[in-house]
Length: 299
Image (cartoon, rainbow, N blue to C red; front, side, top):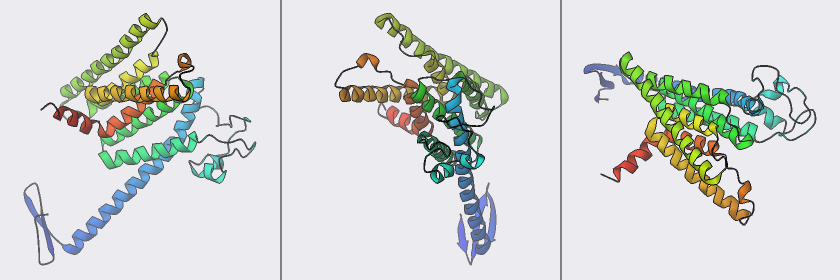
């Protein structure tokens, strides 16, 4: 806004001056605010719907079941879930968290995943707007949240999420590179290199641990997951993700051992993938700021 005289709002676009009556400017501003609010509500509702689908993926993929075939069923009695009982979040509240047929409790994971997906998609809209980056980060959050839940529940990171996620990350890195097509291909190629380096890091740690402890440590799924994260987020945010995940995992392990008073240390299995995914989601939104702050300490 360059000026305001006599009930007329003056502004410029690209050095060209324009003047509009205040009433017109105010109406346009209100309309924009309304559309912006509607976009946020739409992002949240869409997140709830995709969160419901993500719950299907979390349950079926580790069990090698198709996410497209057959209706969802109660895991306790096997009864098919009615359409009215499958409305995201609302059905859980109306059923009071119990199956309509057998009365068994429905896991809190279902509404939690739906709410988390909705919240993350609204955050993507707030942080990146309606853009290629915003849509890409929404897809990344969908994949990371699903993998975090699957690893926490089953200690598995299905290829059905990590491998397509890796390919999508490479494509995304090329698309958001604001340059000519040769430059975009170069960005996609760099994404491949960072993905290979990230997977190599996990494989090197896995091999070293095996030589020292004579047993398997990190799984191959963790290598594919970190490669996927590197393809989406790049080297700096991936390094931050790995650091935060290791620290969080170490804290979790220490707390677990303190509760158990040191007993059963050999039985402790950490879902590293869950920590990696949580750290990656944080890095997607705040990684650039954190890395910038850290580098500023050395200037």
